[in-house]
Image (cartoon, rainbow, N blue to C red; front, side, top):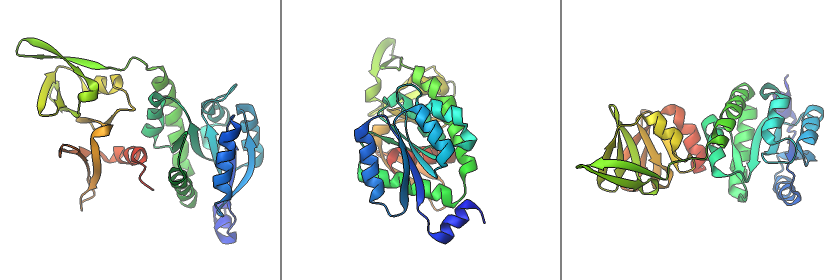
Length: 269
């Protein structure tokens, strides 16, 4: 009988480690976890070095890991422990929105301070589901993706605020906050703003990298949407997904993009 089977047989609560350098943040997590009979707090740490020691010695099932800490960051904790040896990890962060793309791309769960009780419960349920499925191997791959994406995203601070488009011999500036979505059209990209469409000769990959990932999401190889325009996520009987925008437009969602999109939307898993 493995550890997870033993836990299920005995009804033992999931063992949780809290890592955060802010006392109030640790208290918030402690209060929420103590109200959950399915979890047991086995330790707390207020810095990266203490977190590494606690993870190695206590071997928690779940760790709530702050990203920004003096000394070693949460990412550096994962690097030192090794993604394959990390427990199920829920990042807790007040990180600027640029870096959240690293978590979304990897489909890793995270809580953005301040978070509400419902969002916390979703994160715990998702972690519990991963443990019950013994899917920690896939979690290791996701953590590696976070580490690979974190540096790239964190360095990206020159996101587009406007895009110059040519129309009838005139150049017009389109603020990116007015864009509904962008679609691929051969060598061109179609920028959709309300009832207008502008063509620019630009690759979708380049646009995706230059648009703020806190505001734009590539739902498909041929479509990038402004997140605020998403009204709902749709699934047809055949298992295909689409998003409906506030203006009624429906765009296909690649299956590989469904989970990070659901995570951004706060869909329980």
